[in-house]
Image 1 (tube, rainbow, N blue to C red):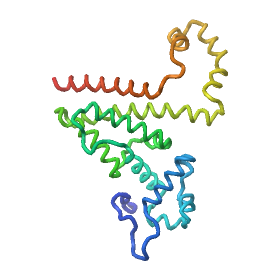
Image 2: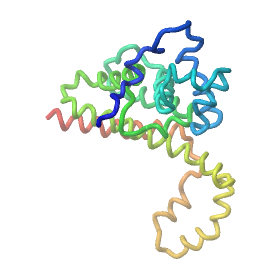
Image 3: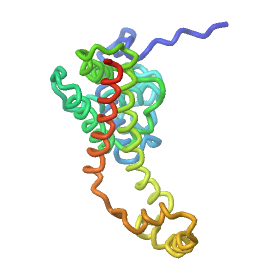
Image 4: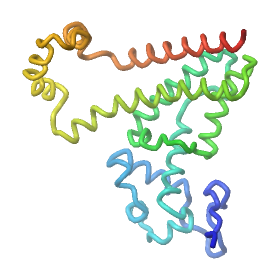
Length: 241
């Protein structure tokens, strides 16, 4: 038999049922959950933990949020609202998409649990939908079909996700291994020297010899975004012929 229909948290009133005036709100619950995730990681967020921080019973939270998954969805949408963008696209699609990229990275680095939630199903919360609409609307005047627009905006978003995940991976590696980047390089040094001296990896040898060991990540990100947007420009020109 089919199960009970699932109703999105976005389609339900904040607190169902009658009774005394509620002592909590979804907003309060989400703020506490985000604070826990920011300090201890997403795994530390549980309905019991959040209820304890609020001085409430765990079952009380279920009057507002039906599951931890719903709570995480609310958290995701809430932090998306931290992106500081104009109320409407400026008319310069490249500047607008770059602003989206820069703001997206900023928010993801502030909330390091966020990139783990970038999955196939998009958030349909109001703040997430506004951001999606902003990105798509930025390219409205170009005369492209909507599938092409979605693909181009998605390419920019994919770069942002990948860059940020790589940034955060080093922090996770330090936590997991107990070695700083410098300590890891020192440990790997003798082996890598043997590998490179074998002559089988000339391109890698050039990287070790000539590349910047400590690049400015802000500059690297902006350069990467510009490179992706150059590709978007070429795609727009191709589709416009």
